[in-house]
Length: 409
Image 1 (cartoon, rainbow, N blue to C red):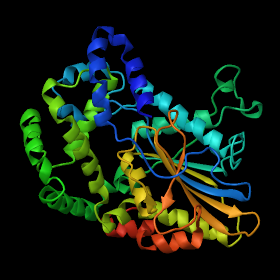
Image 2 (cartoon, rainbow, N blue to C red):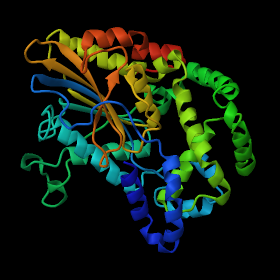
Image 3 (cartoon, rainbow, N blue to C red):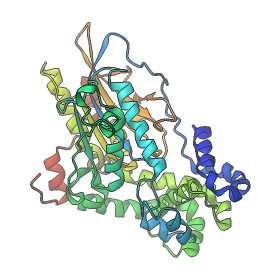
Image 4 (tube, rainbow, N blue to C red):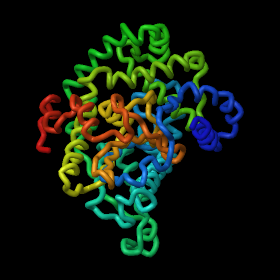
């Protein structure tokens, strides 16, 4: 995976040939900036045996590569260069590389769940088979649109035009306002904001203590207070990754601190899930929806839709993984990463089971089967899975109450 990422980075930098020799020297730093996914579990394209019938999937993906956002730009001493290179996309906009990544997400969905895989999706788009939700951000909406164009190349019956209609089938998605979306828990939930404030204060005295000198230096260099807000470590991490991909050099002053920054960014990402209450707020609604649908299947009723796709962010993948109690030492999910809970039924016994699947980066990796902590079998029996995860269940209306959100949803 590291080699595929670096190869892509070099290819992306082709228009900047005059910098190529210098950039090659910095590829070693890409390793320090990468959080390589080394999740335990077998890597295979056929994880379930012939006895297992796939009933339902909750699939959460991170959007494709994007331009730096305003917070990241505020940390850069190359702001004008970055703005010039991304003037078409604008801050945090999906880049052309990101669109290609989104297309790979859709290809994976077709290959794993469509006619080339488990066949829970038809070749033609049928609205009762799939539900696509995106956060109300341009980069996740565009990712959903491009991904679905790859998931559903139009069959003749749905070809609506002699040119574009032969290669593109429109597939709808839905979103809700950011201030009411449980996928945006970190910004709209008053209780989570309070918990994050406490987590920051505690972490500065604990896990970030070894990095205080570096954080103070970064504060002086950028004008931003890293000690007060350690989440800026992840923002700076993402800034340098974006800069490399866009053909810009890492600043000379930052090179001695890249290893510390890489570890600090990982710790900053983990702050979203520092305790069980934060995990429950962050991922409990998704878990609850999956569990409710699984119980419908257990009662013998048909599930519709069978595939739920959430075009979202790195902290949504992490939250869903945490409440699912998967055993994983993954770092910050890559652009185009995905995590899914797949519900299976044994054709012989009728028993239901849950298989956690992680895709490190669509187009550049194969899916990994993860193990659920506390479960001795894989897939894990549904009853056992529910017992292990029951403390993280959070009904959507309860989320609104806890988070002090007034909504008609």
